[in-house]
Image 1 (tube, protein in one colour):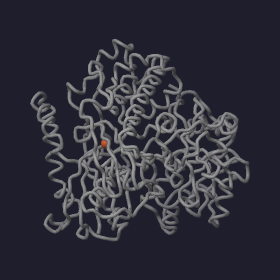
Image 2 (image 1 turned 45 degrees about the horizontal axis):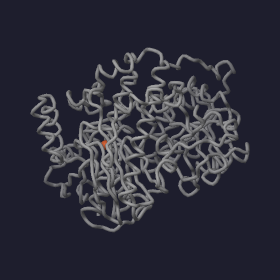
Image 3 (image 1 turned 30 degrees about the horizontal axis):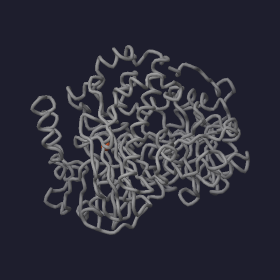
Image 4 (image 1 turned 135 degrees about the horizontal axis):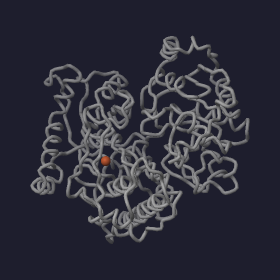
Length: 595
Ligand SMILES: [Fe+2]
């Protein structure tokens, strides 16, 4: 039985397919249309999922859509009466969602009546909860979803037992931890869709000097979560405005903070102005207050469910800094997040919700790795190399055995070179986890600056992440609970911080990926070889891209390699070296990216 999950007309459009409960494929549309966070209808992602399953659209039994236009319809109508713009937006959403079968038929050029699949509309946060619990290793677990807004709610919690979830409560618009984080990020001058993670990185550079004020921005409500101090916001007056100009454009969000926020904290920062102490301290206060509220909710959830484990989802669950403190701040002993905690993850959530909650099928699947996207054969890689400029530019290209290539690549990293590492199937979710990664030496204090100057061009306050052999986690980090999808930041042991300065953040933490042989033998092998050479079982891992979605096809990897000052590229079994650059062209550390 095939179930296709589709997250459409929403940021991070995506698709996933499961066969008899087994995940076959899951991917974001942005990897194909090359537009970050692409919204719209994910035709290419759906096409890939069907190809991966080896079926046509006509063979799909169920289509699961993580949006229910009828959810909280009373509240929506109340807002629609007050705000005509909101009513117009809702009408558009309704039309789009009702038309999904037609959009699907049109994308695949078939008559709508030939699609025999049954369509299901799954409420947004229940799809979030299903996306984590039903692929977790836990038989029973507490559940929490927290994000900006979906189906007019921001937060939902409950418990999962076997193949069932029970919802215990939710928090509706306009109260939202995701919108709180977005609004303050906008106020701090980070206004692009998806900029919140930059502010999380900035938080470590400040002091939570404004925490008292931030306790008025988000107010605690005993036992039932939180509410926003609405004077600081305006989204409740203007409506939750997210727009994208066309199906292939990154979404844009209207400003959500009010003038009162600037009156209380100081003037809002212009995005082109430098980041000052005010922004650093506000970022630290924002993060500190998020953690207080999140941990209060988790402690209450633990008291209600008496579970040892918790499964998290929603955009707020990308806050790896908060996730890394859950064991210290709450009684939970185990946590699980799948790699696409945000709205892309709704595609698998909706599909698994249908499989278990609606059809009553037993649990049979645990997500043990993140490699559910497209992969390309050796022949396809060779064809991409032949069609590229690689040969004509005099680069050294060699085909090597798997073991040899790991050793050669590790030697390059240890020599300070920057390596593009492209293997197997692409990662599901926004993190590169060793199949579409740029890898570098974590021991070099200047490596962060070098990567920024030569490839990534990011703000200097954003950290790079470490990948560590899972079996060595305790040697380098103060916690050892697995973080296979880079979802938790742990403190690096003080005595090891000087050994791996490049991926250690200013607060002494690292957003680590724990790598097992079972999950990714090739990436594990690369780190193992690096450890044999240097004694350090850690590499710096950042996504294989340059201000674009993570590369997907080998052609995009080659293009990024040639466009940037990357030194070495490994594509499957092929190793490609650029001629050594003169030293003055290599380092080029500049502060121009520091804002
Ligand atoms: Fe969401």
